[in-house]
Length: 484
Image (cartoon, rainbow, N blue to C red; front, side, top):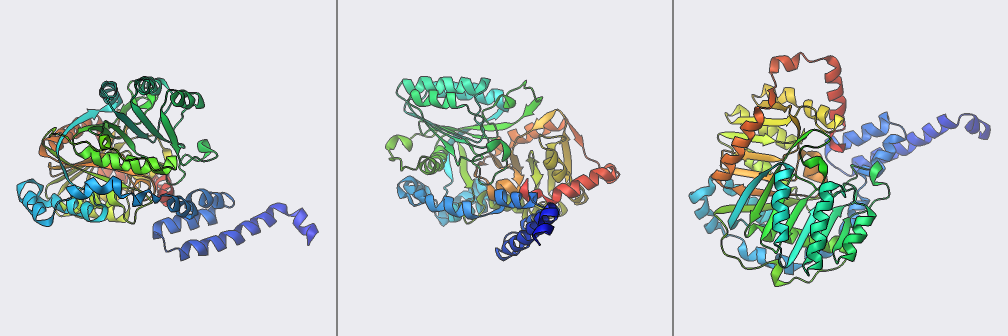
């Protein structure tokens, strides 16, 4: 027997692999997870010996999630949430605002108030910032004016040219006595140890989100902090798709990068602040003292109603996905979606196709090439299905479109960090601003139509005639969609 093992070492290892794989497959089935995700993991165990087990070890196991959220006791921090409870609107007040301007969107407000206790806030000023160069020009000016504190939370924070410009400002403000706190995702960011030490020496408090051993080998490791948040003095903030990297500032080495970000001033920043503080307690392993400057009283800054939706694996419900789902189902006239990755779950896919077939004008804009080969083909695998339902699809040709926006009926808008894919809906930490305002919505529709001028409209007839090799790539990548 020993001689057989020694002479057939690969065959022996293969048998051991499949014994372990079969046991793992039973374990996955017994977990009663999403059927699509379950099938994807089981297929990887069968089709990819050895590699499949590694994929499941890095991406599929829930023990990291359980361990992580046993530590995440900050969600019991009532001090952070007290102000939100005061701002929650009662049913009678919601009915009043429904008649006034919310119309069908009142269901989204109720959903987030009931599930996440996130209030609809008034008195906000919202500005749309197109691309990284506009975002950073505005952000740097606002950072220079900070008087009490600066809070940043980014998926990608690189120590490249734009990153160093940001770090220079943060160090300057910290040395002026401003409290500066920074959270960066350990996997997504390329922040040098030298710059971390520099920031710390200037008095900046900085912590990575969930460090891993080999970040360059695990770019898609589960439960990443995909948010892009800035809060200044508790009154002004930024949220959207633009990370801190030269890739997001045109012109860049990778070509033209099309993105959308929001600058918000007003009460909505208190919601962004609460999410930052909860994450800060988690990454720093301390409970920050809640002080008045974090949630200052302020006069009305504008006329825009905003609600902040956040989601992550720490929640019982996928709040952002449910808000998007509710908005789609409430649509009467039009839906405009821009997303870098269109890999929807069945709920979103069905709601979009149903909306189109009941007469709603549905338009979806995605990059023609994108920054991920697998995501491109997984996205393309859905195109035929949605085209046959009457949805119009546009392939953006000018460069990479990374904006994450949706406009419904020219009245409701969501802009944030969440892609239209499994990872954003179920795995990563995301945050979106939901804007209930016709003017902002009409601006984004005009921006969408301007982007369409740089697109190829996908024809149903031509799409049906694409090469078999393309269809094969699409079908293969779609199998792994939950893992992308």
